[in-house]
Length: 491
Image (cartoon, rainbow, N blue to C red):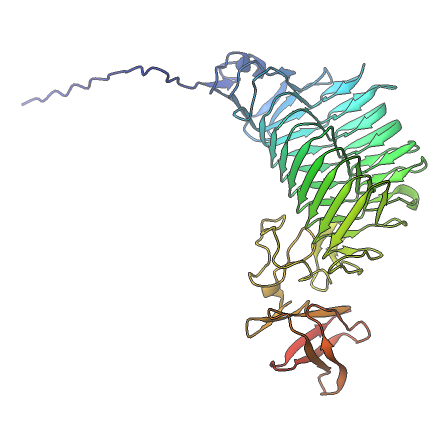
């Protein structure tokens, strides 16, 4: 007996329900712009690997997703014809997303140049795994604000992005070769600002990043490095970053090896320059290796605050040039706690010691660093810039700076009865004893022959015990009422 099965498909159109469309480039549309222009809200423009020579103007449709196949393989290249991407249509918010694509080769050569790479005004977009690189401005006598990314009153979100190798080849006012933020409340997570350059005729403010006009900016795990300005500019304010009249919070940031050219004058804030009514909060930062070419002096080699209020905690600020690391003028104030500052700085738990980084241009901590287990405990930032938990291991004292060293693997902390910690271990200049009861201690240090080398009968909790006069080797630390602990000294 033959049995026949009949399948009936019933299509029901529900009121208020729309179905999104995937618009494939170049399969269905020859250009990215054509695909965007065809979109309704909720559609996705899927761009296959390749280089697309065009400039993009976002349509007046909210909620589009522009999705590439990878930032290194899907490239929109403007070939110097203007901005690569412009988003200015009203009503565009963070339901609009751009992912896995690069915006390259934007060029502006006339008038005042704003946003050769990406330009957003009164709009907000989520950028994820996007590169904005190799965009250029050349406007002698003009203004150049944000060659890579220009945000005006935007609350855009940038995640896992690179804003790098953008350049101002000539302009009188050079603000943010990498990023310029005016107003708004954007956020940046794991974003790199690298190799951006400003060749200013006069004013060079914030080569990597420039923030102004009452913006509220949150940054986490950012990298601002190797940004530089040319020779003989009159004003160099913030080779890495310039902040004016804005509230900025940065955690786990690395601001390193940014530099200004030779000659010129008014070198302030090798890492960061803070101005106006700004309130700047820096937690677990590493600001190091910033300099002026030719070894010229920088006023505030790490950070300069004019009128601004800056609060620094759990950080390392140790730069190459002569001049104070931190400096202020006007009503500017800088408070610092639990940080390593070259030359020293008043505050709770601060030290003045070579950070002992892992290597050249590697700002992880080596096992001999005095910054290990020297931050405040507990810390408000429970992870480092590598996404390791902080402190590591749990229950230890966290490290200064943006990187956390695994003390359990390296044997840098010895725990006694779960409530007394001797750290750092190994030590080079000093170690500390931290007891959860915060009591004073009686300690004695012996060499391996049993000879008493040092005794302190009234050591305060977390007070440094200086051992810089001792040779490298293994020592025994006796804390009254506790079992002896081994201390390794490495020079």
